[in-house]
Length: 511
Image (tube, rainbow, N blue to C red; front, side, top):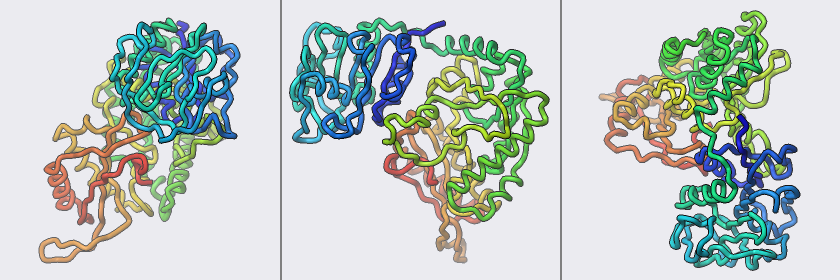
């Protein structure tokens, strides 16, 4: 089935992925492409959205998209930088704002009888994030909405289906952002809302059958949502020709290797569990640099996985649970605004010696869509609701060098924390949680003896996609019980702290 598609041109905004997620929530398929790498098949896109940007249209580093074949030809929505770009280079005027226009504002004027603002009323809250402002509309510009401080908050171009806004409809702070995007895409651009989990499953299974035929495929399972959903899609398509390998790197949660293997048994998957924990831990001995640990784990995983894959006769494909944010983040939108915070264990391709073709059934989906696809296949809700867990596992939650004893301590601490979250019905209210073993000892008193033992930090965050995150205000009584239980039951720990930093400026993990 050929879906109506929406093209999002990325100018480097931190919110570009949010635009795509909001469009997908309307059951409309969209793709993000860098502003300077417009797809050659642009005819297949029914509407185009220009994202915001940290750049200024008044500066020397202006980002110039090629809008030939788009502007005036297709419905076009320009957000923030896009709105200023259209104004600045089409007879309007963009100037530095007297005050940085950032944060909440309210629409105090909306032009009547406009499809673009249907079911949106004066007083509606919007989110601003720009230091430039449009002083004069471009040629053919018609004012559609204003706020108290921003006169030209929204406009359209006469004779075109071109609409521009100086606020961000994709963020939750814009209360009618969903309605605005729906008005533009459904009412004005006439895009059909046919992108659903069931449709995705049916189409993907058919594509996989056609692509893979009778070939054998090997997949590394992690116990997480992405690899599990990818496995079920492939299982539906090729059945016994899918070979799943679940590697115990010695850095999983307590009893996770056995628990996850048991869970997979009930899913009908062909899974082999490989306990390589000693191999991994020996390779990590003495390593304390976070990137060194990540690279060592990545290298060891490939070695172990390659050994096991060679035991399968005539395997031709490697399946990966890559999702859309991984794909987007591997391409710099503007030639350099995004910084590498840390290396991802599953991005960057395969070593030459593996000689396998790659299949990635989830590479067009966001994390929340992966869960919805899993639900449509009747997968276990507890598996689909699992918190994200880093590929390097507890290695990046043990700050400093790794030892078997430190892994034991953290597994025990983590088990108490996660089990208590479940028993207090807090687990599903948290996006991700875990414990960190800090490279410090502190003085304590147990009974009549002084101790000098480890400190652990508990971390729980709420988020929608991991790009930003806030710490969760867990009940004091919960923290008190959990702290007492950890100190009383885990030999080697005498102090527990709770991490109350958000992302940004902190990251979710500590390494």
